[in-house]
Length: 328
Image 1 (cartoon, rainbow, N blue to C red):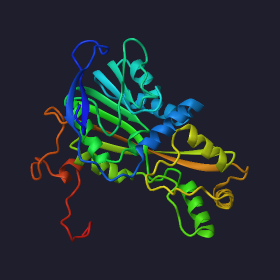
Image 2: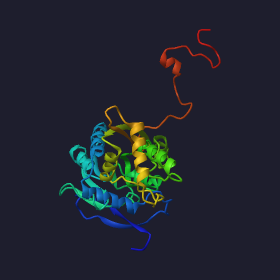
Image 3: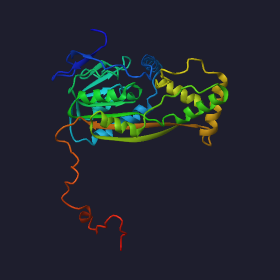
C-alpha cells in the first residue's frame, strides 16, 4: 500500500463475519494537530491494563438504549465506532433492532462480542468503510479526541446508506471545568504561566453547526450534565487515568509538574469545589448528537410563503398588525 493511503472495508451482503473486501482510499490532508493520537492510544492501552473506569460509558450506553428504542425501524448493519468498551455494542446486540454489530476501535478495544459479530482495528480519523455501507453508526466518548471533527463527521455521513442514522455522545466544553480552573489558578500563582493541562472540548452549539455542515438531515443535539463526587482531586485524577483520559494535547507542557503547584491546585480545588462533607465535585458534560443521511422520504421544511392558512386562524385569535397594541 502506498504511503498516505487508508483502508476502506466494503462489507458484503452476507454474514457480518464474512471477510471484508479491501479498498484503497486516499486520506485527506492533515489537519492542525490538537491531540497527540499516539499518546492517546498509549493512555487507552494503560487504562485497559489497569481495569477501566466505566461508569460514564455505562450511563451513556443505557441512555443510547432508550434513544434507539424511540426509533421505529430496524438496522441491518450497525457499527460501534471508537467506543472504549463493549458497553454500547452490548446494547446494540440486545436491542432487537440491529442485525450485524461491528466494533471498530483501537487495537486494545477491537474485540468482537461473539461469533456473530465482527471487530476491526480502526482509527476515528480514518473511517474504514466504503460510502453507503452502513445503516447505523454509533459512538461513545471517542470523537472528542479527533483532530478533524468536521472531516470525521463528513466521513460518517458518507459511510451511511440513505436514511441511515448517526448517534453519538462526546465530551463537551464544560467537562472538568473545576480541574481546569484549579490548575490555572495554581500555575498563575506559582509558575511563570499557564500550561494546557485539560483538553478543550467543543460547545453544543458548535456541534449542531458541524452536523449541518457535514450534510446530515434532521440534526439534533442535547446535553446531559453529570456531577460526580470524589473523595479528593487525586481520586478524580486516578479515575481519569483509568478512563484513558489524561492530557493528550500535542501542545502540553513537557516540564514535570512541580510538587508545590500540585499542592496548591489541590488546595484551590478543595476551597472552591468541595461540599460540606469534604468531597469534591467534578463536572462531565455529555453532548448527544444525531443526524440522518439524506433521503427523499424524510420530512423537509416548507418553502417560505407556501402556507395555506394564517397562524392567527389556526390559533383562533385576532391578528394584530405590527406596531399596533393588542386591545386597541
